Length: 428
Image 1 (spheres, rainbow, N blue to C red):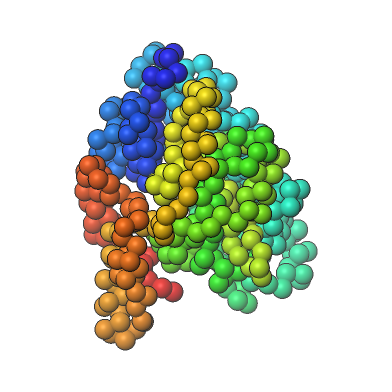
Image 2 (image 1 turned 90 degrees about the vertical axis):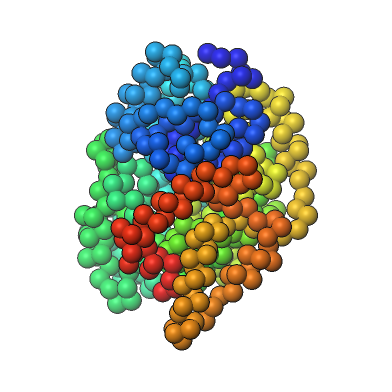
């Protein structure tokens, strides 16, 4: 295996904005970056910071993907010896599950499998939150329709159904709203039928097939508070940056398009440190909260890279590099970077957005405003006012090609699925 200071990095999921952020963060520091993907026509492959492209099988077939990765390591190919970067729940689960085998050929920065699964399974995460004083929405975990029927009479709030984990979830569904007056049991049955899991996961955890029933705080879902950072797992306060999601796509229960930097709440930082210690977790993370009745309720914990990671990098928190230093055992340099990141202070209002998609939102609103359908939300003013400290999801000085690929992909999406594409940007 290569020397720690010259070891390269191996990234996956090249169309993911978090992967692009990692490539730029590492490449700017002189680290040799390779991308493994099933397709070359992906955003990250177009970046000047990616020196090597390695053809890989699709991650959808986890068994084939793992077999390929281990074989790459055994034969000492281009991928061998590099630091592995998990960019999805599927990857972090797979790497943790096979940590011992993979560590023979690659460098990893991951806690034991048990820690990772306690985070990715929302029922087990909820139990850890209760132990450490982290607030969560009221949630029920029925094991089948019979248990749900016994609970229905006592549920007097609006609810949503959510999968317990995204691992091997064939549909990729995030949540399903239950209409007012809707049949919760029937919705539960339909959700189970339409959102099956892979056999490897159900063999490990048979109860994972039953979705959780969670109180839905509709208004709170439009102002999600995010704490993203890095924990070394000892209970020491983690490095964190805070932001609020101010625009998402789809407009309900969607992926963030625009974020605004905000202050870190000391009490939440302390609770996150305690939670990471309880879970035995170390590494980079993003944790989402909703605010309800003056309290912050944890709704998601991503123990990996995430979409808007470039925002933290631009605010003095180079998460991919910290992960790299941890994986290669460069403890002195990690301590130095930790001190520097901890001392960083904002010198203005920082924001993050996907400007191309925000432009589509603004164009749609301009048309609707002329037709008298809805009033503009003034996103054009927002983008202009924050221009000096705006981090874009794709655009970066000196690295133009990923933006070209990104625009091309969105045009293709519009041509193939015009109605769903446009609908995802409208208020509903």
